[in-house]
Amino acid sequence: MLQAANDFCFVDMLRALFARNMALPRHHAPVLEEMTLNGIAKYIQSGKGKRILCMVGAGISTSAGIPDFRSPGSGLYHNLQKYNLPHPQAIFEMSYFKMNPQPFFTLAKELYPGEFKPTVSHYFMRFLRDKGLLLRCYTQNIDTLERVAGLTDDNLVEAHGSFHTSHCLGCQKAFPLTWMKEEIFKDNIPVCDECEGLVKPDIIFFGESLPQRFFQCIQTDFSDCDLLIIMGTSLVVQPFSSLTNRVSETTPRLLLNMERSGQTDPIMAALGLGSGMDFDSENAYRDVAWLGKCDDGCLALAELLGWKEEFEALVTAEHSRIDEELTTAKLQGATIGAHHS
Image (tube, rainbow, N blue to C red; front, side, top):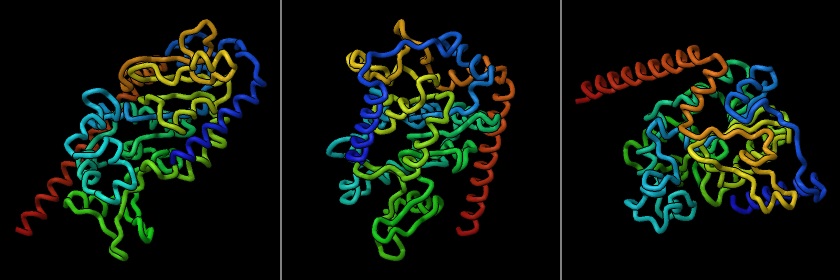
């Protein structure tokens, strides 16, 4: 995965270089009426934002109770010490997984899909889809909460894979989510029933290539996009982070995050190669940073668009539905258990 990411980023850099012909950064007329969330809302209301791409990371799932990776003190990497790993990232390294899969499956049990409800941020993307405005969601997350919120295969690019399917590392036999969940919650190491090979969820480990769908979809999605919304990601993992540079130079980019990320490097900008986001300079013309919790940012944007009441009703109805389904499942489980005892 690392070599593919490096190649991908190098090609992107060359593309930016030739596109600019080594010229200094050009000054653009403002794309938005104002470089604020309200400016984004006006852009959508004007009918210009009709093909919205969302790029999301772990920050949209933290309010569901799922930790992100890098927050000091609470991030996933900080809390992996109990697994006695050689280093935190080892839990997602193929070589370590093949040698000692137990830590990964122990962690998977704690974070398993189905134990959490989608957040306001997940449902905002569903709401955009229902409004006919969502071109695609590119997610770094493996928790499948985008699917639980109602996004479909066509709506999604799971850049780092997900728990939705699993495959045997030996014979490549496919296994469904229900089978993997049963094995994990029995505290078993999942093993193939045909070749006895180790079975791994289809999430991308260090050393693995990204899904082919990722590379296929980026060829057209980012050139077709007329508004890019980035939520809950530090934009440090390649090649995902470089996707922000693939939209046209007139496409607005909105960041909803706890802190600024993905900004233009001043030295690269001076060389004419700066294609990161520019929120604060005198040349800023399309990039907006709204700092705070992603859920709050989505609610604020929904309110500015006049959607808040309708959107909150969707979230409330969906959470009630999930609660009812979980209650029914628990009652059925208790009944089956009583019959077996």
